Image: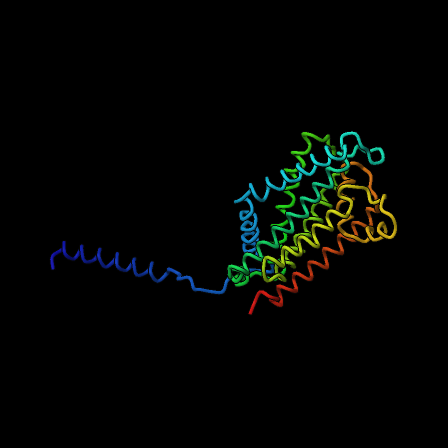
Length: 291
């Protein structure tokens, strides 16, 4: 073998040896079980974002339409009942009415968001796509409920902004505003989850809305002061969580309330805790969700 051939063969062997060495040093990753941790943050965020995008995709129906409907209510009361000149105590009627209408919009839309997403998932058979991922019952409850809270708060912001053009709204207590808006939207979101899981068809869902949610919202001081109610209805109103939602939210704007703010905070906190436990238990048991 010539010197040139020896040189080429030696170089080839050296390069082959280097490739073999590199190949031996490469670590081939092994498929292992993914460690999620105490909370599946990625799954929780994904489900929440999915819920928000679901109602934002049809914002004209889920955000703008409720705001327009609330403005129509305000116009009717202003024209039919002389709202521009009436007062409740020393508060002009329109300023008294506006927070109650905003809270009514929060109540209706928070409930509608969670109840509809569960009901549609059951009817279309795609609820299993939510139950199969590694999400705990608490994570499912939180993601769905926060979707409802987001819609309720967003509708409230749009509605209050539109109302402020016609009614001089001023915030008296920011802490009360934030607490009652979040507590009320959370409570109705959880109630919507319970109704959506329980109902087997849209007729049952409509019955809950028409005979429970709407009457409680309308008859809890939305359009009037409960101080005018005769006994025993005044006493009954004092144990109604919907009354404390509206009363506390109105206090945030006008600085006066018909009931105890402390009792309202306790009732809303306890109600939310009980509703949370109920929804979580439904997901644990798979009540009307799993065969």
